[in-house]
Image 1 (cartoon, rainbow over the protein chains, first blue to last red):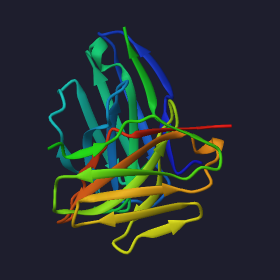
Image 2 (cartoon, one colour; image 1 turned 30 degrees about the vertical axis):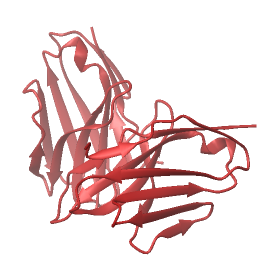
Image 3 (cartoon, one colour; image 1 turned 90 degrees about the horizontal axis):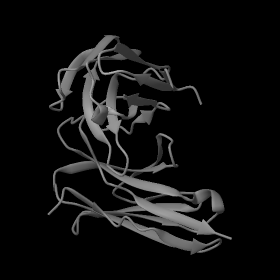
Image 4 (cartoon, rainbow over the protein chains, first blue to last red; image 1 turned 90 degrees about the vertical axis):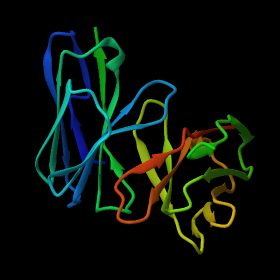
Length: 112
Length: 111
C-alpha cells in the first residue's frame, strides 16, 4: 500500500544531530498528522495540519519542528533530541475533520 | 473517568470463535467513531467507521451505544490473521481534527 509513505523507515541519530522525517500522501487528503508511539503507550498526537495550516500543536518540545509546504507533504525536523525521544513516529492523513485517518508505515527513531 | 477505556486483554481465543470488544468514552460530544487494528511494530490501519445504526463488514460488526457511551466490535469466525491490537478512536463534534485513541485491546487467535 502506498497511500501514505514515510522516509526514512529507520533512523539512528546522536543527540547533537539534525535530521528530518518526510511524509507524503497520495490520497488527495486535506489534513496531515504527526504522532509519536512509544513502547506500551498509546498514540500521542504531536501536530495537525489542515490545508497546510497548523491547527494543533499538542505541547510538543521545540526540538521537534514540523513543516507542511503543501497538502501532500509533511516534514518533522529534529534537533538536539534526547534518548527518551526514541519511538515510532507515524504520519497520517485524512480527508478532513471527522474522517478516519490513514497511516504511513512510520519511522523508527533511535536517539543515542 | 478516563477519556477512553479499553480492556487491554489479551483475549485468547481459538480459531472460529466469536469475540467482542467494548470501548467506553467519557466525552458525550464525541461524534465520529472508528476501529483500527495494529499489528506488532506496524502502523494502525483503519478497520471500520462506527455509525449510529451500526455497520457490518464481512465477519466484523461495529455498534455504537450513545446512551451508555461505548462502541463495540464483534469478530465472527476468528482467523489466525485477526491476531492484532484493536484500537478504538473518537472524534469530538464541531469539526475536530483531534482524535482520542484508546490504548488498544490485544487479540490472540490460536489454532
